[in-house]
Length: 422
Ligand code: CTP
Image (cartoon, rainbow, N blue to C red; front, side, top):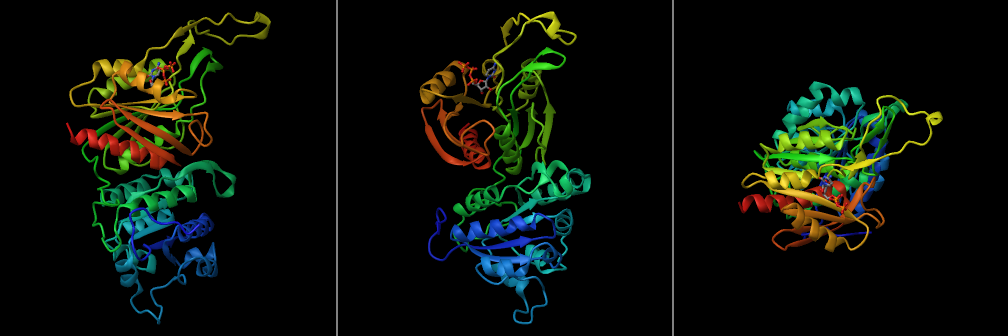
């Protein structure tokens, strides 16, 4: 593919790819290949224990230079400072619980941790571990320490883990990791190292520090009886990506969600089920918020009567009488406090911009994020999205197909612009 990095000129960006000792190390091979394909100079650094999971020779072959595994390479007596100084960015994938602890603690007893401690370049860590380890307070504390120092975290996903268990802790998809790296390099001219406290390309990734953000996500479930409900196809992924991106950028985030996936560090999750639950949570959380984002797919109708016990076939086909749910976003628009930024979503299948523009005006929001959910790779249950962000000020920002993390950052860029204008 041999692509270029947006905003880069001259020599390719120099990225150190750190690999620590987890089963997901095999996926780092794909990260390496994709970065090289994107025109990046990749210097792989494996911990010695990582070589139990994946061979050095593989990275020798796929990286831009031979992989390094030790501080004691006679050919290069000080590789830790050389690599750290030369790097435009360091990405660690997978980052094990042990690696995160040693990095957070400032340990420098192998080449990878020494390189991390000896750099002023932006650092991205991509944790991967078993759910119990991911949720352990020590791991979350170490992540919070790293985030407070400006390190970018690409949160793990929910899915199948080593040993067949299902849970959160699976390494983020290589395409998502690479997208994040390219995004961070995009505004960082080669040779310009961002110091601790900023980890983004050109803009501070802490540009939402001190801002209180409330995000809703997922499709609401409207019960018919104790075992059945009406719902929709929303996965909640875009809302979760928004919450995580806002937290990475320094915001204090509350995520009101019907979804199950683990939210990233720095996000307080308030689980809800129905439109009524979501309305109560959003109206109360929005009172103290600077930014409110309604990414949830709220059911428009709910059964008027909820049966207290299970309906049985023998009772015949039930007469399901529906009633409208409250329009939460419109109510948020009515109650909005001075200076608050309000963002809605419009998932459409036809006349997308026209309908979204009408909803923007009707609901009294600042930004309406419109997407055509009938397009390939867009909307419900995909890891990617393609949106147009319409502003009440008449602005139109097209965000082409990309990961939901990258779309989240594009939306937050618009939010930041509005906040700074108030
Ligand atoms: N929304 C809401 N409460 C509802 C319905 C929608 O807060 N009862 C919010 C959604 O979270 C979204 C925006 O309103 O941010 C637009 O939702 P959408 O389903 O696209 O529009 P509707 O208002 O349901 O209008 P329509 O049925 O005509 O598409």
